Amino acid sequence: MDRCETCRNQMLEFLYDLLDPAEKEALLEHLNECPVCQAALRQARGQQSLLATAARMGFPAVRFEPPVEEPEVVPFQPAAQPADRTARRGRDTGQTGRTSSVDGHLSRVVAGCWLARGVPGC
Image (cartoon, rainbow, N blue to C red; front, top):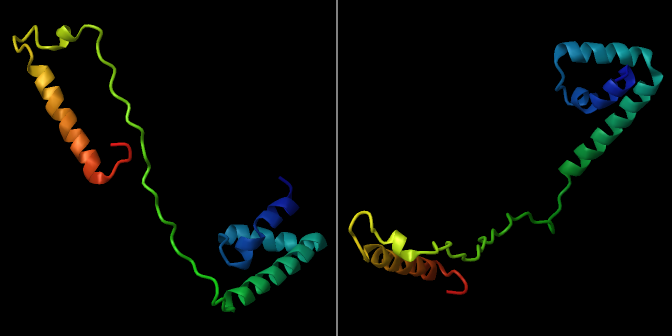
């Protein structure tokens, strides 16, 4: 990046005194030597003045309000069921039929929560 481009990229930081001392010194050295960047600095100071004037103006008809956040609606997608439901029913643990009873209770609890929260489609 050439010195003029670096100078132009740091112009606003310079105007608002946000540069490190070494960056500020390098920019000032370049400004002393470069009439093009001196003109750019004059233009930037004019823009700074316009912004300061606009910041002091009153705009009674303008109101800023935070946006209303809409809750995200996520469509219900049932979990994939295994091909052989008897394999899930506790054959290994000896609790035949217990899983389907728990599934039934769980689905009623989930549906009740959705209804209480107002999820569309329930």
